[in-house]
Image (cartoon, rainbow, N blue to C red; front, side):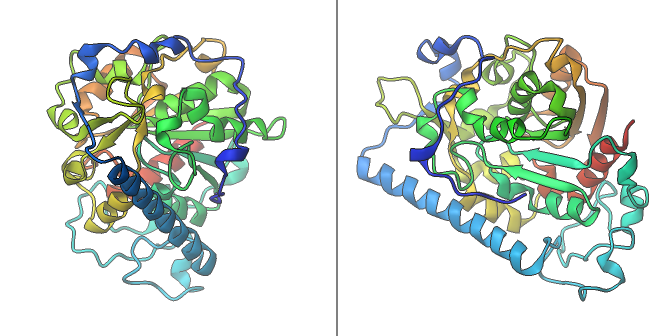
Length: 382
């Protein structure tokens, strides 16, 4: 739930015994796959360092504002432009939520309704296997992106933990220095390892966070009650996220246009990270989201470490396969189109599939209430 600063010099480099296979593949990259993105060659090393530093400072600023707002005002409202007086009838989960003054046209998938209609009355936490939900962000995002979902869940007395993966959010690691999926996911696996015996959580992963929670499920199946994939990479054993995006059925030209390789070790070396063209973020990720959230993402998103995207998962039926899985589809998604989501579902069927009508790739921005309803509904499934 809290956001912690970490120092690069003190980060442990311990690697878990159950490692992702084909680590050496980072140095033998398929040239056909690389052609999907355009190379980025900087004419000035100083400019690269300045841009990286500026982006890092912006991410820290956004996260600090997020943390400061929580400390001063409690959970976030859906909009800060119109608030109800605290302590009134609307402050309780089962009676209502703060209204938004946004002029964005609302669809029936995310209506302005009393909250009891969104979460089927109050949640009886005593009937839940666990009321602790861990939200795992996607590639380029950070814990900051969950602010609406976190607020809604906390209003309904859920315990919520959000985690910055290595090189993401306000984590001080440089994305170009991330060499493996285990290193990238280490904040999550460290958190799960420290849970007390018998304590379980629900893992919810978005986008590349799907591969991250899959890795964690393989390591700690006894600590994960359920896994929720939100427009996420839900892979089979021996498959990487890059494999998923390279699927022959996927003809996502917009994604190819937006993604660009970064070569921190030189243009003659394998790429180290993937950046996104800021001018295409709205169309690619946020085509149904508000201008405010697009602005927040534009100054907060960071490059995606490339090595973890390239790694193939090693998943077993006894560990990963023992955890109950659920998938939430986003029907207006331009980043992972519904056709590609369906392919992953068909190849590795979860227990149940939910559909978010009118949601872009980021339902925590575009359809926060509808996403909240589904998270609570899945948590209540016995």
